[in-house]
Image (cartoon, rainbow, N blue to C red; front, top):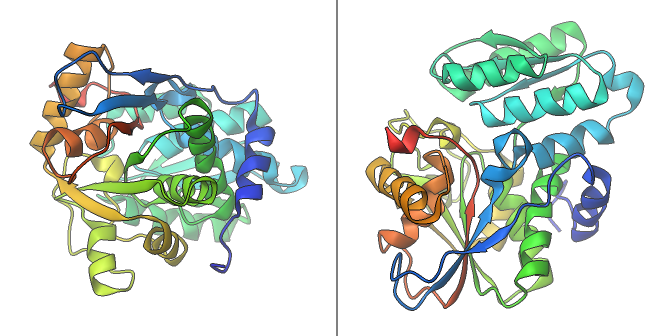
Length: 315
């Protein structure tokens, strides 16, 4: 057991807890197409159709619903590159509790407006998520409000893992799951859940070349802090992950591959023009790894998670 890590039972409990707060998103077959890889019968888990536009609604809803009412009513604080902030703002709106979201200055105006539309307050701090995180933690401590970490929280990880329950219910024969990595909350939950259900299933994580946070950490055998971020996929771009996620990835993820921003952009264009799927750069990362040949010998039954909506890959 990994200390503090959720179990499959926690993921199953999360699925029951967030029912009615999130959507069961479709698993769509990309075929009949010659691309992205001949011989692969690719399916797409369309979390771009999730409420708030990304998988983040799962973890945020599970966390907010797990809190005691009196604790939540004080107000909740989080830091985000965008999608987690929108999800927490949504969950706070559903629960009727005030939310403050700290964002780095590079966050798109569109994501900031989405957070504000759900009624949350926005604070801008620094250039990267790690800067916003530090400011949010300090604000939470000073104000006495709970801080909702976007990835280093067992309730968040369990909520994200509910995505894998749906995939394996809909496609039990799935042999390969491809998942984008930011802080590693999503892949932690998905890998834990999928491997608990089917230990033979292969898990491949995908990071941008300009933010290889977990790739570098696994190489060093410890959580490392990157010297900087050079990717435009800001929702995949923390300087550092966390011990909980690192240990879950090290145990359950078979491989991490890196993709360029242009490879993500090309994948986003392919998703739009061939499948009618609007994915942001991070949302296209899993498909990018497959299309760019970064994954060796992908099996016929392959599933890629389209983790977030957007049009930045089309610009």
